[in-house]
Length: 123
Image (cartoon, rainbow, N blue to C red; front, side):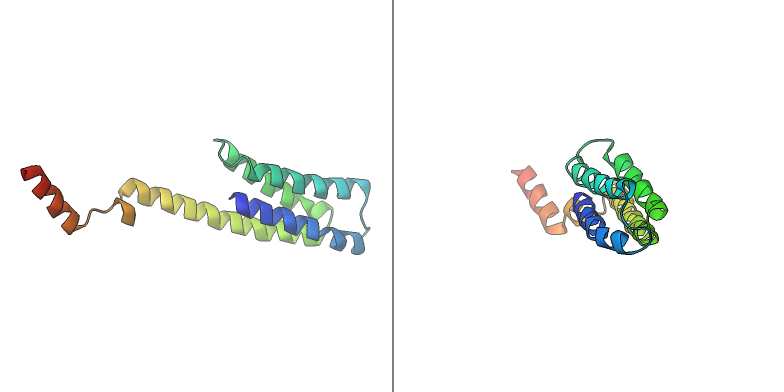
């Protein structure tokens, strides 16, 4: 998730020339909003170990979708990244359910290891 936020911050900063050339250009509001959003994404990448990090990530995506007010191109990028984050959350939930069910390969005990364990118990 931290890597996704860094990549998203890079894309947001690279979109500044698009905002500058298309529409009304960069105003103090649009420039500070976009730069502030990118800075929050970079800071958020370092906070991924916190229990509230996922809520912060989702709030950043809402702010990113809110860039439709500034530029349609940024708003579309917000929708694209919202889809990426939706897929990340799907994968996260799938992994957590597999961990709970004990279905990960690292959680499996092979028959050979089980037989060795019973031989050790006999000694």
